[in-house]
Amino acid sequence: MHDLIHQFLEAHVAHELNRFKDNGYIQTIKEEVSAVFEWVKKIKLKDVMPVEQILGLIKRNVVELPVAGGVTELAGEMSQKVLASRQNKKTSLEDIFARKQYDDIVDKVVSLKKARDDSIRRFVNSSVYSQQISEVLFTGIKEYMLAENIIAKKVPGVSSLIKVGKFAVNKTMPSLEVAIEKKVKSYIESNLENTIRRSEKSIINYFDETRIVDTGEEIWESIAKTKLSEYFSAIDDNDMEDFIIIGYDFWLHFRNTKYFKGIYTELVKYFFKKYGDRELDVILEDIGVTRKMVINELIEIIAPGIEKALSIGYLEERIRARLESFYLSKKAASIISPKKTPPQKTKKTKKAKPK
Image (cartoon, rainbow, N blue to C red; front, side):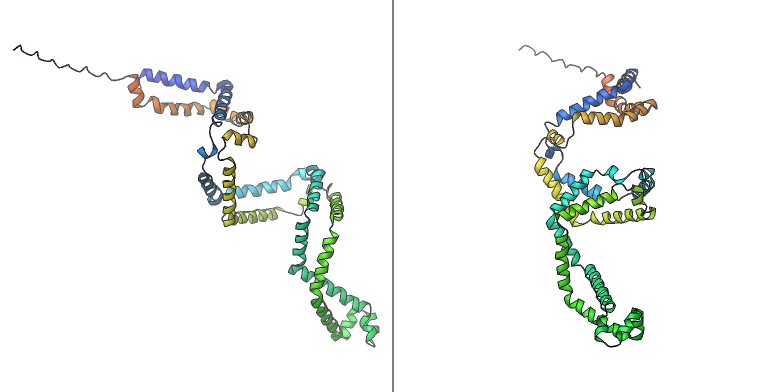
């Protein structure tokens, strides 16, 4: 290497290193962030980031990118740590969930009358509810008929059997109970629709605004002081692992649905419709990002890494590698030691002979 080139290289390396030593990088960060914030005042979102680019970014990194096994494994381990944490034994629900927040939720539920009525309507018209209410009605009516001697009053000789108990009736006169069951089931089936309709109306009327507030108050009083460990005791490590697997499988399926694609496409287009023609600094301001915030966070995040890179010589190594690519190039050599080109000979012109 030419001595002069070597001197330039070493001087340049030392200059760049000095920008990082003795917290010098802090000034560099301030200067560069300030420069960026001045630059974004003149740049519109659509000029640096078109819609198609963002949609492609989401497709590649959200939809198509495989979820690494380490992510799910870490999620499982972290969830187990949460369940086993000693904090759960000394922390109650009211310590992490303010009463005002709870009351706000209750008030919101009160205001959602249509949604509440629709939910009740869907529930009472479900097959599960129909089966359950049929079973309850059947058991209640049947037991009432036997216990109150309704059959015994009309059938001579049955009264003494019923006094012995239902078991005696079943054993002595099985056909009687079969007849009762058939009659009760027929009655329930023919009146089930009306029963469900009355049940729906009753439940809707029951859960009025006052009742919901009172119920919310009762629930809060019963759960507020309960330690988190009592809630978590119902869930073990295997349960958490199952929940994570279920959530993982759902996400793998959901991210490939037409619905998800349609939703994120609409959101991206809406964002660009609102901000595409606006300068980047306006967007940053709207989302609460300030120059001071960026500077402080960068210093906080980068400082330990820079100090370590300086102490082990890694930073100098990378600076030198970057600068050597220029200083060892033919271009640099030609600037430092340009080749001398021989002077061109001038052609002598012959003098014209006088005529």
